[in-house]
Image 1 (tube, rainbow, N blue to C red):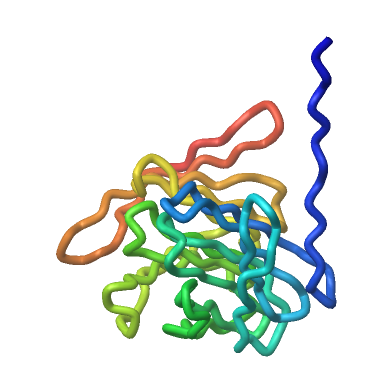
Image 2 (tube, rainbow, N blue to C red; image 1 turned 135 degrees about the vertical axis):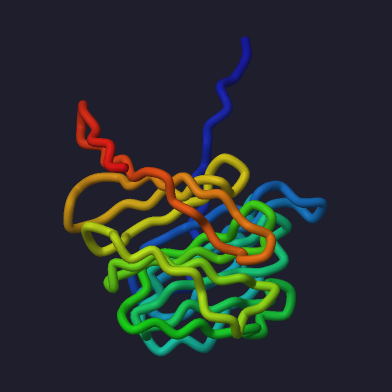
Length: 201
């Protein structure tokens, strides 16, 4: 008789305030990793299989609402209530760059090719930072109908997906990148609602 395998949940202690976001890295030659965002202002990196603590990213002065790792789990990013998104070296824990915003940043995501960082938040503006030129001004898309809660890259970095807290929908952006401009051209916006959607061109 075969015994059923019982899944045992990982319990990862360490945060002093509620955890608001989790992100698993893709599988890398060193395994896979888990990063957690918390209202305690200190994202934590862990082994994705065991939950063992690896390190804490220290430098934010407000709640961290979102966090992510790049494709190779070599860099981390975090979005915070201190009006910044930060780029971190995931191996050393060092802060590589701080991207200033004018309001709370609620979401961040690396592009698949790891060259771009997408952020969004209470300003209702999507920002795309070129990580090869971190001091350059970001590309901005400011037609969000509400505060941005989540962001994601899709279709080999040709599409941006974001959700907005004020409208209860999902926004879908098609983008085509220019090598010279490092920015998107938006062709349409789709708003999805329960069983229907609206297309705006």
